[in-house]
Length: 246
Image (cartoon, rainbow, N blue to C red; front, top):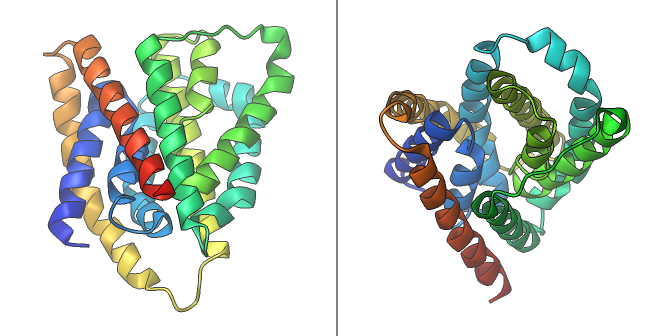
């Protein structure tokens, strides 16, 4: 794939993350998977996703407290992602592509409907590992980190800054686990060096886009952007499912 296309994708993905605090892997995987195997798209995603999510994670005020609260979920994410990463490699690219489309569409529908859930604190110790495990399976199969992690974290009714940091924590752990899963299942004949180089180059436009998005967040209606963002994801999700089935 031409470097200019990859740069444009990550510039847009970084911009989205800068405005709404998430969406870089969702946008990047959705656009890249149209033109390349999902496993390659996920490999290019690793470094930009990791750096931008660490940035988001360390900027918050409550890392230790959130880690103590969400460690069970993070453990489930690691196990599920590594176990499910076979969906992105080998001969399963068509299934992974349709799975990615379904994940994007579900995420978009939840966002457009502004569906909100509430989790009773008494049930967190049981639900967190299960949500983490399911999120890991989805991540391993599609490269998308958001389902069901984002709705679940929103259901915990965290303060705004804590929620942003919790998302950064979840996405960082998901990125590391995805990298481990892809490495464990990597084909020795694959052009891994080229993909690592492409991931490194993609970091620059991703960071630039994130900076622009963060600056623009103060000047534009996030609600308007949210509608456009989720509508675009819904269309893209349906397109990817149709692409895989035709």
